[in-house]
Amino acid sequence: MSASLSPEDRARRVKVLLFDVDGVLTNGEITIIPSAPPNTELKGTEVKSFSAHDGLGISLARLAGLKIGFVTKRNSQVVAIRARDLKIDHLYQGQSHKMEAVEKILVAEDCTLDDLAYVGDDIIDLPVMRKVGLAIATANARPQVKAAAHYTTPTSGGFGAGRDAIDFILNARGILDQTIEQYLDADNPESRRADIGVGNM
Image (cartoon, rainbow, N blue to C red; front, side):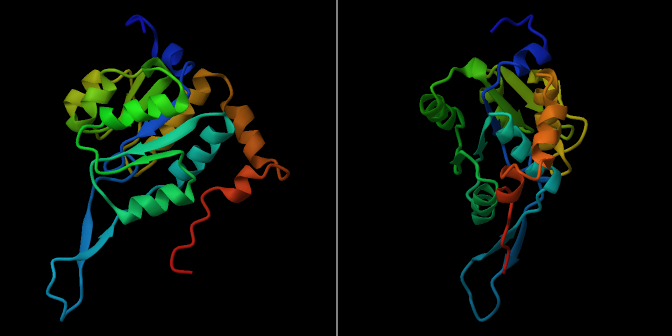
């Protein structure tokens, strides 16, 4: 894709939107609650907080025809649960070299790197961000990541950065307001089926 293209031009081509998780869909904090005594194994429960704004944004993205993926280095049951609740199309955890997952997604979706957008915040995201059609950095991203980005979100990871990325893409296509109205339509099943987490119920 030509380097002279505007971020909006790049956004109009996106078919698949990929997110890092920690620091992008969360604020980057990793809270570990150790197992209760007398358990002496080094095990615990990992806690992450996600933004409901991002969850609703992913529903809007799906309505607009985008496929969504999470590509993250850490392995976390919390992320698997969140991906299930949001009905994410592609989930890759334990990815030290994220381009390996991206290559698999390209094959699965029959698309090119120019058709991909990726949202990242740290240097592990750079190999992907340097190749995709639309690279997006969060407001809290490291300087090197912002330098590689075509667009930087106004808010930080965990506080709506994912929604910012989705709004930017849909705005560039001129369909954000239309997609919101689709979501609000009582006859549209998407708003009923998406992001219905069960928690401990």
